[in-house]
Picture (cartoon, rainbow, N blue to C red):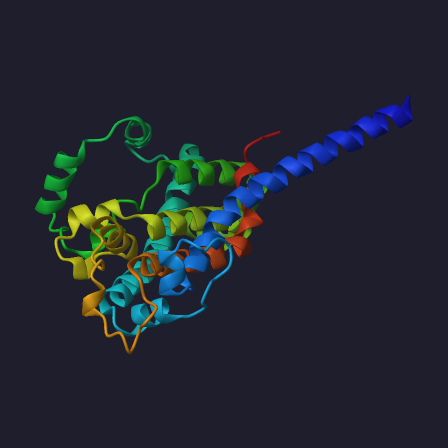
Length: 296
């Protein structure tokens, strides 16, 4: 009986692993195909002979992006600055908001109930694109780098995660600090934040992915393409196909550059930074999302 169950268990495990491998390959194969296209020759791309391995290997598309397409480099740097500023601001605001929500009974902040209601209301309803645009215009945020980081500084979902995490910390930590003369600022930044790295890392990765992949706000609130983030620039290039005419390209310099290959190269370069960062912070995901979710 045990042997029969064990055999069924092995078969079940094998089927599960097979399904997971197929799903993993289905996710990896498209990206590998894009990388192969970005490194393939003009003739191979025109003949549609590129699948998972470069045909006629060359780096002309990347050379063009790094040397000739100055707008790509500029928007790339804007996205890097947006991620750094946006993540730092989001973590600071989230930590402060999470602490207030988790310790509201001891802080006695006037209007805290109204603030909680507004936070929950904003999760369900928005003002609409036109009112938001007019509000940003009246605040002088149009064509301003701040419009890329300030509106998303407070994310209600992140604040709830942080508040639940803080609620799960032992009350004795803060009580002992208050007895030693500490204030709420000391408790937050010198006690709670150092022991909250899993939750902060999780929120930081979420915020970084959001800022890096955002393209809509750049196109709507930035009227000059020189102020766009990278994803807004890529959206414009991919949808408008600005490089369909190869006659404008010096054939002796970049013989194998194609609009399709250049688009693939831009996608690879836009995806690579966040892809490299993601694995290092992934181990915090489960810990950061589950700690504080169950209270004894």
